[in-house]
Image 1 (cartoon, protein in one colour):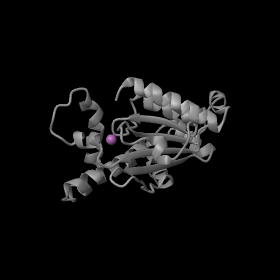
Image 2: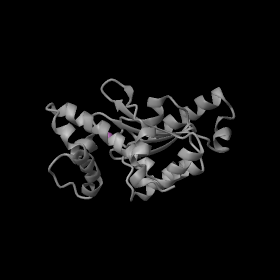
Image 3: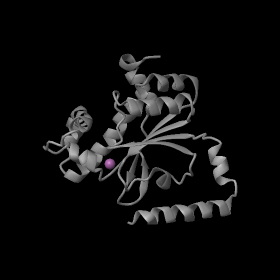
Image 4: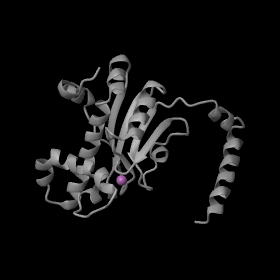
Length: 208
Ligand code: CO
């Protein structure tokens, strides 16, 4: 696509928005009050706002390869902290997706350079759930399950942070694990029992 086309698209978009509401951008410039923090994969096929049907201003978005919430990722930790303590979001969503090339790449025996340490986190998820995953003979189904288990583990990583533990106690923060099925367009709620997880991991990870 010609880059000039992007600017043409933008001009049309501004026109359309102003036709609906002449103060649209003035209102956007006044500030944000999103209800959701969405943590998803950088995959170009998984667009947070579009798949959730939300408008600009409704979701604070953080995306990286394979939707990871690593404890030593300053960016992820800053996003979670800012969303919880300043934006006071009501929901944190970790959204994975089937056919995630990041997840698949993590399971290959290949030297991927700088991606090695990043994707090692996915291998750690596999190791934690090795018995279940190895029992799935169909390769595609095994990858799909790894996508789901990775979402679950990243939800747990969210719960490990001090700001989230504080918000759990002080306000009604909810954490959700979802998977977007690229093959059907459907969003699947993994119904991760975060209250139960919170209780289970408290012994080791309680900070507050
Ligand atoms: Co992906």
